[in-house]
Length: 96
Image 1 (cartoon, helix red, strand yellow):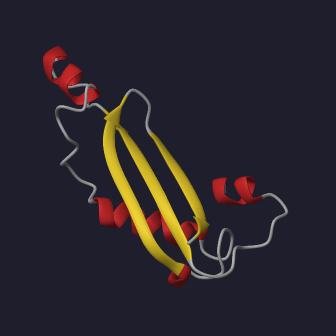
Image 2 (cartoon, rainbow, N blue to C red; image 1 turned 120 degrees about the vertical axis):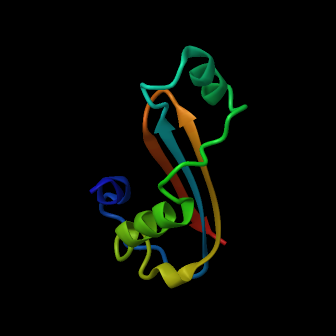
């Protein structure tokens, strides 16, 4: 749904592409104040589930035939998962 909104009336991209995917997960409410601060300062990395490769696969599958014709066009993926105040996914797809 978000991919369709972002693409508007544009046709899917053709040719070789690279994708940049930045996934932000909220800090669990059960974490102490000290641990929450560590997560938000990036000194504690997000090493919990879901696995980053599974998240990337779901995002790319969701963009198939909307942002690009096929996810086989992606020749390079740069993906990161972090903790943050607000859960979100930021994606940039561009010609390689």
